[in-house]
Image (cartoon, rainbow, N blue to C red; front, side, top):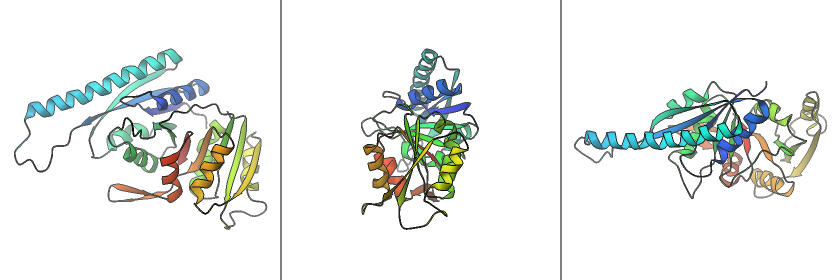
Length: 276
């Protein structure tokens, strides 16, 4: 399926790396782009016995809406310069509360693009929003590193382990894989047999039927784990983007990632497309 509708979470500050990647992808695919800004409403501290002054709450809400509007104006101007058909929406979220207002916008789009949390300019709930969208929106998510990242698409990598989530990531990534000059299927040898025949021959055949020229590379698992094997491969081979499955399960209102997913999201240096 072609990518025809992209939603990106617009940062409230900073260099808008995720928005730039989303607009670049929209330009390549002729897609419509939606910039979603979030107005984070304040949390009333539980230790305050009396009611908060109404004017304080209203002032804080207006400030949050103003920040979201300014971010939306920035995105709108970026889209105009890129020549991309775009719109801006705003979701109001209570800081630390439910992200359902965000999920509502994400569920009917082909791809969500969101920036990694930036420790220099942190935004409320960013890690939680990434996890929530990945596991509850039902659409693939492209996470862009806070250090920046472009979609040159010269060398795209699929991290393949034969799992259902990796399969979903491959299907979701197909339109982007078809933009790439080179596609590498990277398999970490964990000692577990994931298919009959040569490792990776099944996915290589599948991708070849979609007109892709694929290289399969099986690498040994380092003692430090699968995530390090993937991150090292990305660095050593000039990978522009990674497609992989995302693992996790919910506990209360938190998500506990599988080790590789968590470590890659923390240390990523190129855009990573994940599906769950």
